[in-house]
Length: 231
Image (cartoon, rainbow, N blue to C red):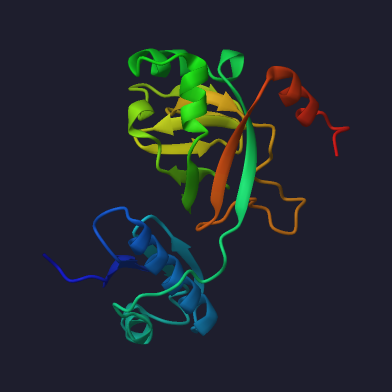
C-alpha cells in the first residue's frame, strides 16, 4: 500500500494530492486543511485548488511554474498531523418538497425499503449531511451520507432533463441540481433554494465542509418560497 498523502501529475497544468483511499471525515478534513494552506501560501502560478472527497487538485499556469517546482513548494505544507477544519462549518437549512411531481423516484425507493413515501422522506431528512465537494455542474453539492436503507444506485439511463432544485440519491450520496440539466440520480424531491447565482457576491451557496439539513415542506409552501415576491 502506498503511503498517503502522495502527489502526482494529472495533466500538463495540474497536480493532485491524494490523502486517502476511503471516504472519511478525517480524510476530508485533511483535504480542506491543505487546500486552504495552499491557497494561503499564494504560490506563484497557482490558479485554483479544487477539493474533492479524498484529494485536492492544484491547477497552475505552466508559463509561470512547472510540476517539479510546484511539487517541491507543496511538500512542506503536507504532513500527517491532525488538523482542525480551516473554518467553522456553516449549517444550511434546505426546505424540500418530497415526492409527487417533485420526486418521481421516491415511491420506488420507499417500496424497496419497505417504507411509505413519507417515512422515506423523513429518513432522508433525519441526517445532517456534509458537503464533500462541488462538481458535475456549477454549485452541485455531493452530500454524504444517505441512510443505508434508502441508498439507491443511479438510473442505468440518465434522464434527459432534471429540474433545477431537484434533490437526488446516488448510492450513499445525495445531491441537489442547481440548474436544469440531464442527470441519472434518483429524484426524491425539489427545493426552491437557489444554489448558484451570478448575482450574488459568492455565487455558490454551499462550500465543501458545510453542513446541510433538509426540512420537508408541502407543495403549497414550495410554491410560496418559489415566488419572486417572496423575501
